[in-house]
Image (tube, rainbow, N blue to C red; front, side, top):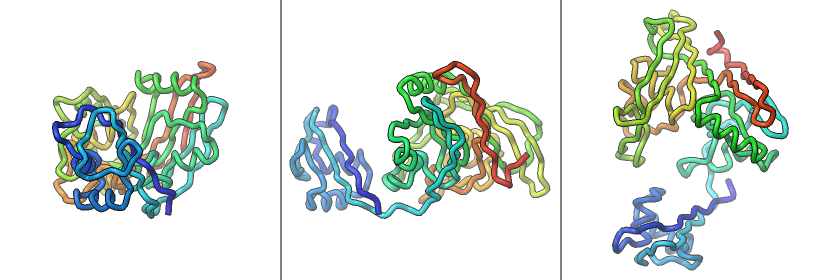
Length: 297
């Protein structure tokens, strides 16, 4: 059982006549209107610090808050390995199955960020890995590293290489995928990132390392700045989804299955190598995390 958490929102431009229960149910999405009414009656929801009424109209600038009581989080591997530590940076190896950050209302303390901050409370993540991806995650420990590291990731000056197991045998030994990635509506979870012509540019470089007898292939994948779920979307878009991919299907679009979520696990992907200029010294920094047995070249 975790310690609970309080979500807060400063209301901006509410719709005419929008009520507290409307916003909670349609914008926050942590339950049906009936569930939100029950939480309001239990006194879990406040508006400007006072107990909220479900029918209270919302005004711009008000603070809406939900003090969620403690809950049991799904079991995950709550561990990590230290790869690098100095006054500016921290690099750790995340196991597959552990979320990097709190997400979806399910994970709070069962996250890499929570584990890291118990030892390094100043640490700020410079990027994230999907829950099912294992390997290197980099954290800033200083304001300098946070600014410089964030800029390096944003501008594509961090070289990131992954190992993945894909379905099928790519015909080419090396190829690039440049399918744009954007958001589209999803009937169950609001919006999701997918392959979309109207999306933002994204480029993934793929090198085939081994074509295996079971019809799968081991590939090395390289990205620069990166979009959400980029590797998973791109490989699915070209007909070679990651082995065990639970959400993205042909064309880089969601599977048409009730209950499927982009945060689901089962695919085989490992953040193997990461190279950047150290934000404090400017010296080259090369990090490597040994892959699991099934992904060794």
